[in-house]
Image (cartoon, rainbow, N blue to C red):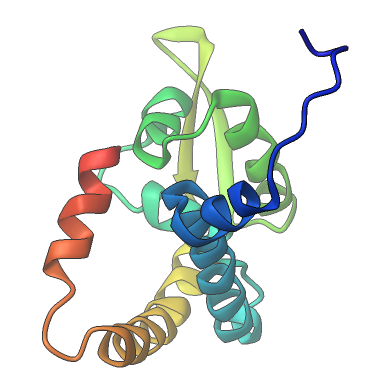
Length: 149
């Protein structure tokens, strides 16, 4: 089937470009990520690192699996994302005393300070983007995006 020479009309390319929800969400996600990366640069974080630190901001240490589920990421991706945060002293990764195969993740004092410095930047950036994109309310879009997860 793939070896056969079949043509896809250019109009199909235009149709996908103009209507594909997946393409538009990917493009929007990249644009939002760039804006948040720029905004968070003064505190030394990317948007992904901010999300990860925020996911670890909880009363009890989190398991790797719980964080992966919350962020809708696979465990190996979370592990890779944690390495620079651990190296920079923002996150502590310890063996779970009740199950040595499992890891418990916690924010360090430095991680808490960094997150505390980042939250006002996130709030300001988020509010500006939301007001610019949705002058009345973004609740409908937020609900639709949450339904996908």
